[in-house]
Structures are given as structure tokens and as C-alpha cells.
Length: 442
Ligand code: FAD
Image (cartoon, rainbow, N blue to C red):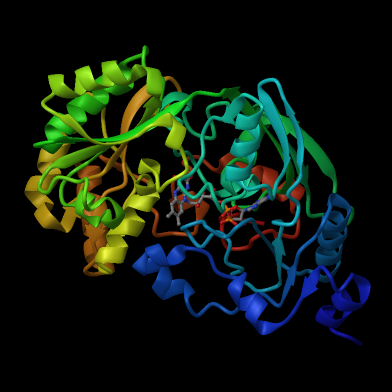
């Protein structure tokens, strides 16, 4: 009898099956190495046995049926920019790379219907040409795919106005199940919660419909303040100011701005910075607010230069961690939710306790209608034990941690996963979709 690796090569076009070692290794990793904990646990995981790059839904369905028949694990991949090892095939098998399915199916008034492999930057460019724009996107939008964002991300630039993926930012999805005869489901409404941030464990998204907003002319700026407190108060006020359209309000304490090497000439040493993206027509109001809190605009990118140079937004969200790690390889990060009514007190407690072991970087987000100071603190890594001591202390003072040092959905940032586990049993009865990423008693 022949092995499944031979059979898959005989049955499918050589254009979509890749078994050479270099490709298998490259496409079996993601950006988990931002976490020293995940890096230790995942760097020696064996590569997938085959990489499949389907060109259409029919090929996706055929591969899933093949995998089901042979009991082969299937791990989906978009661009592989996830940070939690979500796209690592823990038990080998097939990595299904969907980046070739990159058609923009339709851009209509208020929506875009997309194949899962389209890059977010490409969608936004096309939408803006049509007088619209995407609402939320990760700071990796140049590479990241829409399917990977919906299945493995949470929020990003735009979340200060439109919330996270769960806040109506996915309208519909086409899902394939992992069964003898894979089904094509068209899902909308509350059932989407079983697929958003699912790491490809409950089904495979081949098409996604997302909402669009009218195009805005965005300016970007870095506003600097003597203290993080002033930067936070300014940020909160701007975040609450309904008259200013914005995509980004990101306060960070010194020395985080010192990591932003390309901005070295425009950043003032020793000061906190707030990274901003806002509608250019609101500049006078933003300047007025900044000076009320003792700040001034140190760097400004006008709307006509938008995305023509390195942008302020390229230093926010988890790109902040990236720049920190470039300067100081001992740095890693956490994901945290502070309390709106007591964040200042929580900041003081953390600074008193950890000093230079933790530098604070916030992203103001409005989710489920509520403004929240979410944070991606940069942390100096000493040991796993110490990292989890820091996490426990944060939680003891009411700072909620969404642990980025785990690939298990149940332990990470998703929160409740029960209904996803039920859905997985139905859609993936053999437990073959990205095994190890969700805890299911089968
Ligand atoms: P991948 O990494 O390829 O996949 C992500 C997960 O989704 C995997 O589990 C994969 O199996 C699954 N998957 C992929 N495609 C599908 C599909 N079609 N159907 C079912 N499952 C699928 N994330 C944020 O949310 N916000 C940020 O601001 C942000 N900033 C980042 C900054 C840096 C520097 C880095 C390295 C990462 C950042 N991320 C952020 C994480 C990541 O870049 C994004 O979530 C991105 O959208 C993932 O897209 P991708 O195409 O790379 O997905």
C-alpha cells in the first residue's frame, strides 16, 4: 500500500501540493517567537508533511475530504503573522495555505465580499479608490489576510471607533466543515461567534464579508507629554470626543518611543508619546486638546502623505513590541485590559511594583460601546516563573491579562469557548482541524 503523502501527490495537481523540506518548514511557523515561552515550546515542532495551496473552494473541499478519509490533521494558514503559534501544525499533517485565494469578489455600498486570502492592505486600497475604507485592521495589514485576521486576530487600528472583530465587524462567512463530504455553510448573525478567533478549529473560512465605512482623509501625529499620566488623560479625552473621527489613540511611556528608530529625529527624549490617526479636518481641535493637557505635536503626517512614508500606525499595537525587541532582544509583552474608572491607580501600582521591568503602552478601544484602556505592556523577560508572577500580580489588582504566551484558545484572549467546542464536535467530528489549539473532550 502507498502512503497518504504519495497518494495526495498522485491525486492532486502538482501545482498545489508541496512536499519539499524548505517549503514545509517555512510554512509551518508563525510569529510565535515574540514569546520566549512559545519559542521554547514550539521551535522544535516538526514541520507539516505536506503544504497544500488550493486555488478555489472545490480544491479546498477535496483536500478536506481527503484529510478526513485518511485521518490527517489540517492546519489552515493565511499569511502566518499570528503571534500565538496558532498556525503551527502541532501534529504534522497538512498545512492548508489559503493565500492564493485572493479575489476581491465584490465591493458594494458599505461592504466588501472577499476570498479569505486577500491581504487587508489590498482591500483597503481598493475600497479607498471606491470612496470607502475598511473599519479595523491589525498593524500587520500589509501582509495579513482577511481570513487570518478574522480567525486569529482581534482588533487593531480603527478599534477606537469600531471595536473588535466581535463588534459587528464581520457580516458573513462561507465555512467549510471537515467531514466525509465537507459542507459549505453560509453563516451570519450570532453563529459567527463560533468562527471569529477560532484558529481554524471549528471550520475553514473561504469567503468573508466585512463592513466598510465612508473614506476619511487621515492624518497621523505623535503628540508628546512630560508624563504618562498627562498622555493618558489626553488620550481618554480624545477617545471620548465624538466630534473627532479617529482610528488610533495610543499613549506610551518613555522609553518606549526611544525604540522607534526611524522617528529618532522627531521624538523628544524622556517624554511620553501618544500615537494618533485622526481625520485631518479635526487638526485644530486635536492641537487644542493636546495643549490643554500640556502636550504638543512633535511629528505630523498630512493626509496627502498617508501611507506614502513609514506611518505612525506602524509603531502601534504589536508593532510596538516588534520595535522594542529590535532594540532589546530580552523584551516580550503582555495583553491587558485596565479599568476605565481606576486605570491611573492601576498604572501607579504597576510602576511602583515593576519599575523598569515593564513599560506601559496603551491602545484606547471602544468595544460593545464601552471605552477601555487596553494595553500591550512591554516586559523584560527573566524567566517563565517571573512572567507568570507578573501576570498574577496584574490580575490581583484588577488588570485583566489575555495571555499571549499560549496557543490554547481556552487559555488565551478569546474568553468563553464553550459554544465553539460544541460547534467543533459537529463540524469536525474526527478532531482533525488544527489539533491541540482548543480543548475538546471528543
Ligand atoms: P495566520 O497567522 O496565517 O492565521 C491566524 C490563525 O487563523 C491560525 O490559527 C490559522 O490556522 C487560522 N486561519 C487563517 N486563515 C484561516 C481561514 N481562512 N479559515 C480558518 N482559519 C484560518 N493582531 C491583531 O488582531 N491586531 C494587531 O494589531 C496585531 N498586530 C500585530 C503586529 C505584529 C508585529 C505581529 C507579528 C502580529 C500582529 N497581530 C495583530 C497578529 C496577526 O498579525 C494578525 O492577527 C493577522 O490578522 C493574522 O493574519 P494572517 O493572515 O497572518 O493569519
